[in-house]
Length: 337
Image (cartoon, rainbow, N blue to C red; front, side, top):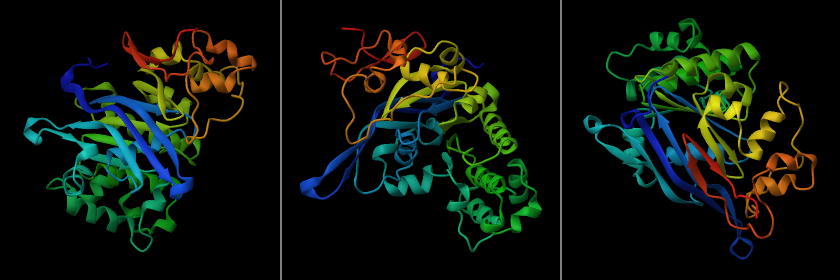
């Protein structure tokens, strides 16, 4: 495990909030997609961002790549640390489109998207996609066939069109496209969704290889997933998101061994190798997130309320819990009133 020194930091997210204005003026509502999110991605390490579907995880990838829709508003920021020899730090949330498209996307930050086949042009072969990407952003001397082999593809498969690719093959093409520019940071957005177990194992192995298995010269990898079992297998660090907020983060081994936040405890409790107890109710609508500990409000009055010991959700605790550092971990929550 590499030491956590400043030189290892590839990207920092500092209290980033994303809001969407939806509806007409008289009935307009605000979607609180992400609130005060802070993360640190380090070279040679994989950070898994976990949580239930719809909690705001994937919005972060769009924010970091400057791909949010026109009705989005952001506060806070995210800094890509490229080093003095590569042009210095870049504030991603305020960067111009010309900077993002010409120097960041693909070249500094690679994206492995969810539902990879849907991101491929249907009338072009996999080889055509790779060849154009290599031509536009690939380092000199990049060979398409070698790039495909690194992603686990047989070069003979590159002549297939997207509709001819299996889910696993499409995912490998997506990995090859993400690696074409040799980026410093890889964002993998639900890369195992819809894949069977052997393909999940292959994808996780690829991500581990990119991160360098903890070697400081590897890439910084952000794995966005709702699959805690997958995160536990490969992540060096973990951040747990609920209702648009990070509620707990830290070294993956420590968080899985001793979860502090009641939501993390309930997530692990719901796994087959845990108590296999489902979490009652549903996450709050992001247009109407309750104050205080939003998750404690969800399980209040259920048998799982004992897992919220040390956290308050009563009327006297209406303020949003602050994410505070405790050693090498972060936790959001109020002490009981």
